[in-house]
Length: 187
Image (cartoon, rainbow, N blue to C red; front, side, top):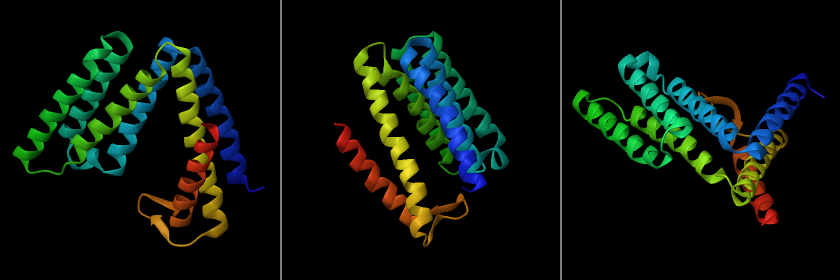
């Protein structure tokens, strides 16, 4: 077994353990996980789009928006998260229009913010939310794992070499198809 694959398996087991524990625990523990995932999504988004390099102020505003939404998820009124996120998005769009910039920042604000809000809302405090989250994680993990092995087995043209040089079209298509198959089997 390749060293990279062993590292992926080991880190996957550790992360799955943390995620499954937080999902089972629910409440504040899962909300913390949701917020952490949303902040990681914004970090990855701003890194991929080079937002921190190109517009420090816009990136700082994006981080502020994520921290406020995270605070509402953890300690505030969850019902305010969507209106507050919408407000930050509108301000961001206006900022872009005035400064004639790109729409990467508003996109990142929405994408990361909705990630945290969605995860914490789906899980909720009941057993239906627990089952729904376990289903989502099973489909996502199956898609990711099967995309990796399909891409390795078939190879072919790269999907987005500048963003993620190892991903192939065959892996993306194979992972999506097999992930859908797994999801339909779980229903």
